[in-house]
Length: 85
Image 1 (cartoon, rainbow, N blue to C red):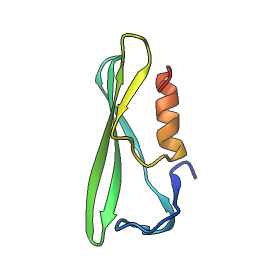
Image 2 (cartoon, rainbow, N blue to C red):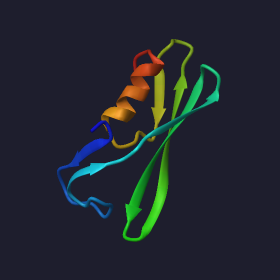
Image 3 (cartoon, helix red, strand yellow):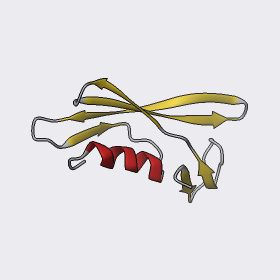
């Protein structure tokens, strides 16, 4: 359930429209400062990973580059880092 998301309009990626599931993994690249997130995306028989990066700014806020599908799991990973996004 934490990996669930909803697409209101058709796309070229599975599930094309409606409800889908994506597992999100988090890896710390620079201790306390930079993290990467990864989800799998499928286009027909081709499966590729998409990535996002979160960086802790000097203000303590997080800057997120290329956000992923907003599953509860992904949003929880961001919340666990603390700070405003």
